[in-house]
Length: 196
Image (cartoon, rainbow, N blue to C red; front, side, top):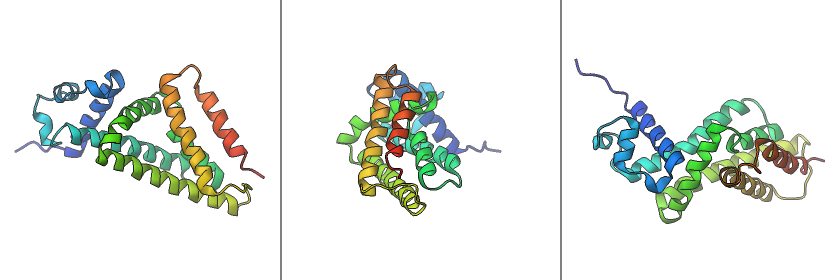
């Protein structure tokens, strides 16, 4: 009887190998041979799961956002308004080893996304989804009377996203100054400025 292969599980293994390589050596150092070795496959065996390196890298970039969204859904659960907004932001912020590795991977992909329309589309789609989610939480907070600011929700979200992307860069490049405690303090200051 032929062995049943879980293709989705294998694809996840390959993506995890990509992440490990990028986190250790950077995006430019990743070759198909390296990916195959890291994932425990013979060179050329990856083509059964991905057509080429670009397809693997695109899937790895998408996985970064999907992982954040899964964590955020679990963390937010039934929360609404400002508490939900804060929980979403915390899952995007590089506050532990897992999220710091995600930041390293995402930052590595940003340069590639500038020149790759498909990767730029992944980033744009993720940012649009987070913007919509954040605006929804801000509307809830306004209805609940938890915020009172003349700043439009779009501007508040622009500020939050700029801070969150900055945390990712600074946590990777300026880790001593960008501690989890300081990141949380900045976030809480931003959200506190919205309160009545």
